[in-house]
Each structure stands twice: as C-alpha cells, then as structure tokens.
Amino acid sequence: PIENALEDALPDVLNSDISELNFKNVVGKLGDIMYTYPFSLPPFYISIIRCLGVLEGLAIQVDPKSRIISKAYPYVANRVLTDDSQEELREALRRLIFTSDGSIRWSRLESLLDEAKDSSGFDVVPVLDKLIDYAISSEGEGLLNEIADQIVKEADSLGRDTLIYFTQAAGALSIRDEKSAAKAMQSLVHALQSNKEEVNEKEGGEKESKVPTPIVSFLDTLREDLAETLPEPTASMKRTMKLGLLLGTRGASSLATTTSKGNAASATASTISKFTPLVRKLSQEPRVRQKAGEIVARLSERLVSRGLRAAFSLPPPEFETATVANGNEKN
Image (cartoon, rainbow, N blue to C red; front, side, top):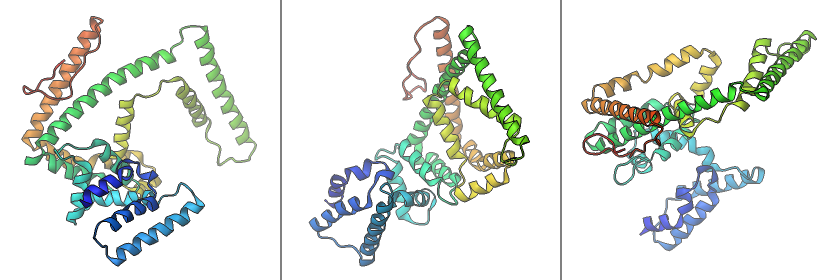
C-alpha cells in the first residue's frame, strides 16, 4: 500500500524533468504519506531532509530557478550507472532503465548519460560494458533484438536524412539566378570587409594578442554566413551527433585535461581505443555476430527498396520496426 500511495502522490516527481523538481514540494508530499501510514524514518535521515530543504530555500531566495536535486543529479546518475558495489544501486539502475517486460527505456538511459557526463571522473565505458553483459546473457535476448531493431531504424533514417540534407544544402549553395549571385557576393564582401577591419585593428597595436589571424577571421565569418544558408540538421542527424558526444564523454575533470592539451588527434585515438575491449567482447559472441549479419541484410533490403521506388517515382516505403519470425521485414 505504501508503494501505491507514493506512486499516486508523486506523479509529477516521477515524470517531470529533473531540473524542475522542487525539494520542498517533494518533501511535503512525502510528509503526507508518513502521517497516513505507520512507518518511521531514522533520525539522521529526517535531519538530512530538513537541512536540504533549508539549503534549497536559501538558494531560491537568491536564484528562483535553483534546485538542490538538479545540482546533485549528475553525481547521483554517475553512481547509479557505474557503481556495482551495492545491490541497492544495481536494483535502482534496473528499475530506472528497464521496463517490467525487460525492454529498455532509451530516453531514460539517454537522460542519465546526459546528466552523468557533468560529473567528475565519469566514464561511459563501464556503463556500456554492463549493458553488453546483460544483452549477451541468457536474459538479454529480447534486449539484443530490440537493439538490432533500433540500429536498423536509426541507420536507415540517418542515411535517408543525410542524403536529403546534402541535396538541400547543394541547392541552397548553388547560384541559379541573379538574386542568388547577389547574395553570395554580398556574403563574400561582408567576410572580406570584416577581415580588413580586424587587420587594421591589429596594425594599430591595440588588442593585438586577442585579434585572430586574417584567415581564421575570414573562415569564422564565412561559417556564420553558411550557417544562415544551410538547412537545419534533421532529428536523426542531431541524435547521432549527441550520441557521439555522449560516447566520447570522460567526465568533467578528464575532459578539461584533454582540452588543455589541445591535441585533438590524441584525444580521438584515446576515445577510440577505450572501446576496443567492448568491440572484442561483442565479436566473440555468436549471437552478436548473427545479429550483425541480420542488421546488414535488413539495411540492404531497405536500401534496395528505397532505390527502386525512387527510380520509378513511387512513394517511399514504410517499414515495420519489429522483426518477423523469418528475420525479414514487412514493407
């Protein structure tokens, strides 16, 4: 009964964004349940709750948007994702990212990774290692199928959207009439004028150390003009870029160290090398190799289907996300 009462009393807490949680409101709703059901909490636990409530109240007086839970959440997410020392944390992770039927809550996992990356010392490799161990276990057959479906869906969507994006970008950059030619010339003149002004400022002797080189200044101005001309990246392209950022995360302190060195090639090589043991573990699993073959086959089928329909000016195909028994997909 207490579990049901918590779910009924805290629907906003369970479903709202972590940055919107007010600790005082959460404690108030928990207090109502404590007076309804006969159970008690340790004195130190109540003291901690009161201290946090007072601290957040003081912080809200300075900044109305300040939230204690929001500030602590990166550390909590890091512990839940990476700490295997306590059974309570492992159970909390299972409840957070898995449904009752074993399916994974991708949005919840993404949210946890997004928050944990701001915690000092966070490394995404142990998280992926635990996910891989579960997927290749006897209990993870359904998760393995779900991951395969997601890879096929996202890769197909990314390929289609990338082709459309580059087609639209080529059309936006092409000069088809006098108006487009005038706009391109105006952008070029604007970039050259900005470059000339900054060169003159540098020759004046003031702020010499802060003025960028002429080439860098010209490229920055050109990049700003292109950003206004090019189309907006699609949702699948944004998801892929965000996934790349999450996979490359090594925690706040490690990231700062990498940035201070300024060696992008070394950082990239280090990021790639840390995933080598995970790739080796996956390649040694027969079920994973079988799923990889199915993914390639399904993507090839989608590519051929899209190509044939485009060649005959037919509407694009619609694919079901679920894999049918024979391993193929319905069109």
